[in-house]
Amino acid sequence: MHPHQILVILAILAGLAYSLHGPIELNNAIEEPVTSQDQSESLRLKLRGVTKQLDYQCGPSYGSCPSGTCCSSADKSPVGPPTKEIPRPHIGRVPYGPQEIRSCTVPGTIALTFDDGPTRYTGDLLDLLDRYDAPATFFVTGINNGKGPIDDPSLPWAELIERMIISGHQVASHTWSHEDLSKVTPEQRADQMLKNEVALRNILGSFPTYMRPPYSSCLPGSGCREDLGDFGYHIVLYDFDTDDYKNDSPNLIQLSKDIFDRFLNAGNSKINSWLIIAHDAHEQTVHNLTEHMLKTSKRLGYRPVTVGDCLRDPRDNWYRADSTWVGQKNKKKTPKKGPKKSNVPQQVSVDGTCGANYTCLGSRFGLCCGSNNVCGNTTTHCGHGCKKEAGYCAIHVPPNGDAWDPVSPGGKAAKSEADSNVRVVGTAAATSLVLALIVAMWM
Image (cartoon, rainbow, N blue to C red; front, side, top):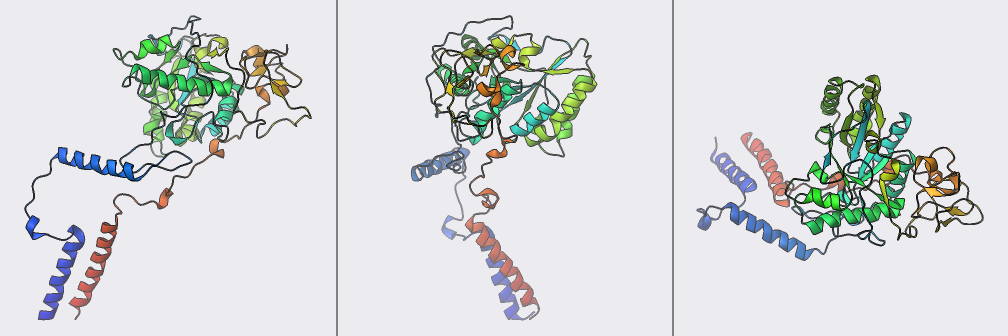
C-alpha cells in the first residue's frame, strides 16, 4: 500500500470518529460522572427555557407541545351556568357511590360500553350499532385527546352525542379531561365532574347520573367514591376488560376477540349477564372487534342493552335535569341535514310544551317532543309518536365522525428526536468518507 493511501485511510478514520462522536476536546477527556439528578435538573432547565421562549397553546386549532411536555386541557371550561348547586337526590334502586357497580342484574343481557369518545370513529360505531339494533352506553369525555370541547358548535361532537340519544343509547360521564380521580384533590375531582356536566347539559339539556372513572381508578381511601356519591353518580366498572386499547392493530385485535369469547363461552345466557368495557377511540375496536362481539352475543343468546337497562333502572333516572337552564345558547341554529326549513323559525321551548314552531332541542325539559306536545326524554316521548319536526329526532348528523379529522402539525413529515441536525450531518459525512475510502483503495 502506498504512503498516500495510508494517509487517506487515516484521514477517513478520523472523519468517521468525528461524525459519530463529535469533536474530542483533550482538556475534557476525563469527565465527571453524570448523575440522574443532574440529568433531571438539566431537562427541567431545558423545558423551562422552552416554555419561556414559546407562549404556545395546544389542541386542534393550535398545534402540539414541545417534546417532553404535554397539552393540558383541564384548565379550559365549557360555557354556560354551573351545575354545582343542582340538587342530587339518590333515586331508584341502583346503588350510588361509594358503592361500585361491576355487573348487570338482568340475565341474558350484555351491556357494551365505550369510553373516551366521541372520536373520529364514533360515527362509524353508531352506524354499526344501528345495523344490529344494539343499544350501548357511551362514557363521554369532555375535552381529552386534543379534540376540543364536546359542546363546541363548530365541531361534530355535540351532534354525535345527540345521535347517541336518538338511537336509544345511554350517555354517561367519563370526566372532563380524563384525569385519574384517585390522584387529584377533592377540588380537582369536582372540577372534572362539574365541567363535563355543564358541557353535556349544553348539548342534551340534562347531564348523566352514571359515570366511569378514568383508568377505572377510584381507590379506597382517596375519597373518590364518596365524592362521586355526593355528586349523585352511579360508579360503573365492568365484568371484564377487552384490552382493546392494547390491541389496536389488525395483527393484535384477535387477542381482544379471544378475551371476549373466553368469558362469554364460560357463561350461560339463561343465568348470566355481562358488562363489557371497550373504547371508541380505537379504530380496530370500531371496525373489527365490535361486530365480532355483537355476532357472538347473538349466537350465544345475549341481548345487547344499555347499562341502565341491564340494571333495571328506568330511563328517567339516567339523567339529572337543570331547572336553571333556559336553552342552549351556543347551539347551531340548524342541523347540517334535516327537514326543510319553514318560513317561521323554531324557538326553544321555555315552558315544556312543543310542536308548531317550538322545539324541545336545547330545552331543559328533555330533547324529544312527545305525542302530547310535551318535551321529555322517556321512551314515551322518544319512541312511537315523537314529533320529528319539533324534537331531536329531526336531527341528522354526519354518519361518520371523520367530519372532523385534525392533522397533527408536521404530520408524518415531522422529524423525530433522532433526526437532529448533528446526526444528519454526521451520517452524511460518514457516507461520503466511506465512499472516499473505496476510491482510495483502488488508487
